[in-house]
Length: 83
Image 1: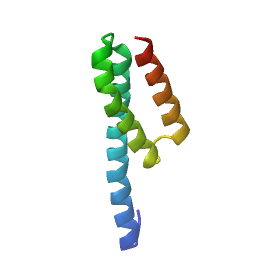
Image 2 (image 1 turned 135 degrees about the vertical axis):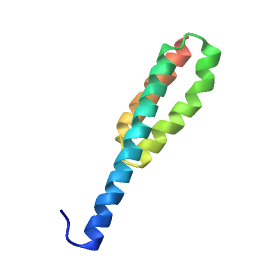
Image 3 (image 1 turned 90 degrees about the vertical axis):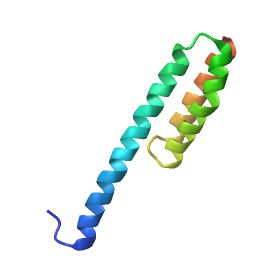
Image 4 (image 1 turned 30 degrees about the horizontal axis):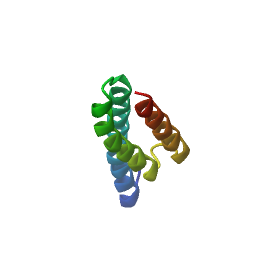
């Protein structure tokens, strides 16, 4: 267990950030799955900007790598365009 006040605070803040990152990452993955499962082009075009924003936010906060976000966005855009 940490002995310093700052170390104890760091443990608390790390736990909070870890839970928030985990929640946002899982939510984004579910949104990507929902978009890929969609067969209606209009609905997919409505969902795409939200999913792209979620991926950009995860990449900005280093939850996922920026290249992974770019790769996912590219694949999703191709899938929507092919519908």
